[in-house]
Length: 161
Image (cartoon, rainbow, N blue to C red):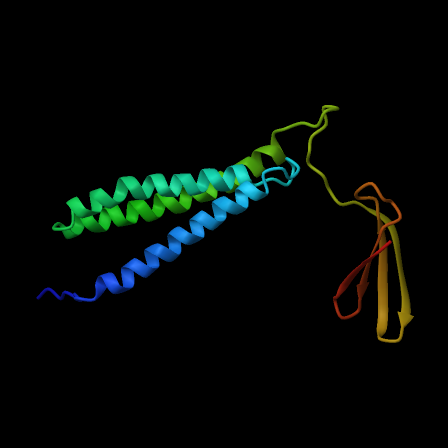
């Protein structure tokens, strides 16, 4: 026996979902446009715009295909799975691959790698206070060597200069 599920009110649910999705995509494009003059180091607008346009391109190509293969359940299911895979993997690649490339393969202007690490200077002190014991450690990460990281005995971190 084959079970099916159908409804005469499907469009009443589908149209608001499509409208909300389209409005969120347009708002994301607007935010990319507004933040286009942010420093290149922090600017994600280019890749977010590429992701949104990729989603739109996949949807424009897949919706007619879904209408064509509507009668064949196997083909319809395959196209839906392919669309979900393409959208999610494309967005993931467009957002994260530039970061990975920049971190692992690009060099700074002086030829050094962009990889950074955290290195403690070895100064570890514990001093009791009102709430228990506090540990502090100086680090030489970043441009300010006087910056200190303080960890309370309950595991909370505070950064002080």
